[in-house]
Image 1: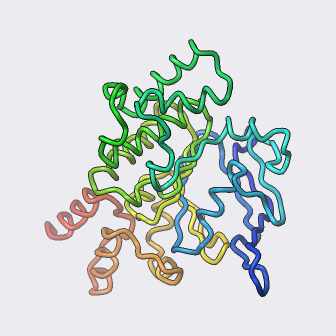
Image 2 (image 1 turned 90 degrees about the vertical axis):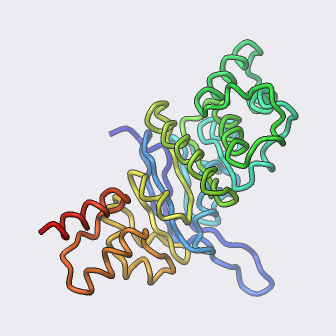
Length: 281
């Protein structure tokens, strides 16, 4: 197996305070392989967003190591290589949009990386097509919906041709339609463009669509596995301040009433089928 695209070893991070340093990450060991779609879950203050910011050297460890394609993020001379490998998308797309025309905004990153103009044109067009926004390339970003703006922000990162995209709660400020647009875009990038995706989220339905779920609490990883293995652990999720997906919650409560139902029915369709099968007996 090839080296992981992201790796942490005993990663710790603390913020200085007037008293003792406040520990945010507490000995995180993690490997993510190229091409994976990983969701990182946790309540506010669990450390998930701080972990995300270590993945392209926005933050550097207080202790331990972070490696991006084998590059130590503490190596200042390799910072450009790290940022080319891992792109970041944040909660508020307005904070990432810098130009008055969609295609100009997408060109901003490649221009700053020194990409030749003819290649920039190719990369921008490809990025906008990848997120389904090429038809709006001449539009003003501020006139677009929240979901469209976030897709433009993703395109701006993609135009730099990263191998991995880390999205830090990208749907937190969006309505349900915008959330669905962005999540469909992210899944398409992973499957069709083979981009490694790390999705930081507190939405269980989003995490359920990933191939792997990591649950964080108090700066530590408390669970790591496939959604079908993690989400049936209802009591564990509740103990760290998380609610399971609504489908699992329904199955869990009905099981407590003595009904024979599976806890790994994650989608609405699977849940409905399980209930139909039970009622048809």
